[in-house]
Image 1 (cartoon, rainbow, N blue to C red):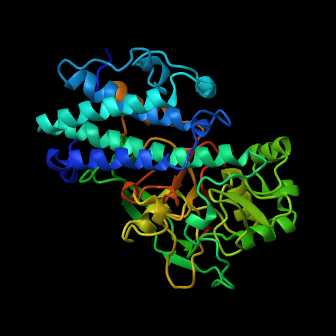
Image 2 (tube, rainbow, N blue to C red):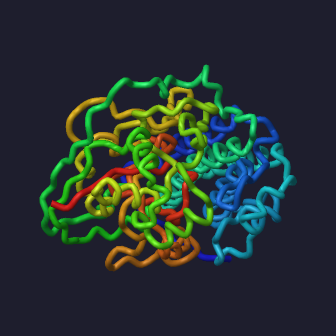
Image 3 (cartoon, rainbow, N blue to C red):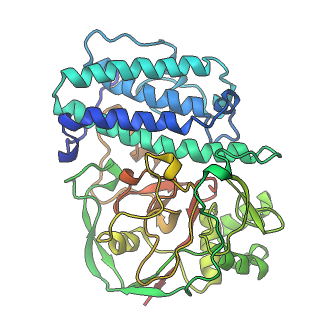
Length: 431
């Protein structure tokens, strides 16, 4: 059996509170599925997406594989074949079903997956009630943060799936969703907030939970810079389109221009060709000019920045600007009926806004290891480190990121052509 390296225990997730956290996070995954019909659980709309049923099973597999099997005496698997079906990419655990073929798994049924979740929940709760082991608490904390990542993926994957239907069905009817797409008549002009340069430290301190890719904290040299006080809006991105932004090779990185040409992109994902509406989790909606542009790739974000006479921030610049700001914004709460599930306008104000929530912000930084980084030994060492190639860092969370999941040091990462996540643009300048 593959060895499991226990992550460090952090104060806010001691055994006394972890059982309540477990119940809460697992319940949120179930709540995300409440609006779904059975058919919605099974279909896979593209290789990058996974069916909702697979997300529910894989997050249960994680607790079973890394906590129940090694730490719960006498535990028996719910179904031995699930070890193969619902492994994602942990080669040290064993082989797995191919990712692009997850949508072909009509069996096990949705009912069987729900029974699997109930089985894992029952045994996990028994283990947590009986154990005060801080190492188990640390593993559960990792598992809960892993599940929160999949909660975000469930919503973005469902959005992509429903967008492929010509009837434009809503995940959640607009009548039941908060009024997040009300058109604001105006928004303050884009302004830049300056920051000093110098030798500064970035990365997590290790005093609270973090993923291994946020460590170690280290020094980095920063030149003076400025960040835009808010995200780029749909109206501003429309100006880029109407100025021929998708037709000017001089604005694009070489790989970006190849992608635009090959894929025939002419606007962000989910926009209509008429440029006046977009598909949302509430169905087709009028395009709000003052809301942040979203579902753009790194290539599009970079091209827009060039067109605007600016650039994308580095991840160090972003983190240093955000580290003292409160973690508040248009994020996703456990009460899904209170969550917007769509980017909202910044409104008018001063200082940096929308640093957390609304959209993940592309940075100019490749996803690579921090100085002195080493992945943990064992199976969990495959969690982040082996993906540090050919991807780019995004910061800040989105409207479908759980509120208690994000922090200034959080490093998300995707391939530069990816668009189906809530990805947007904040401009930067050198000063």
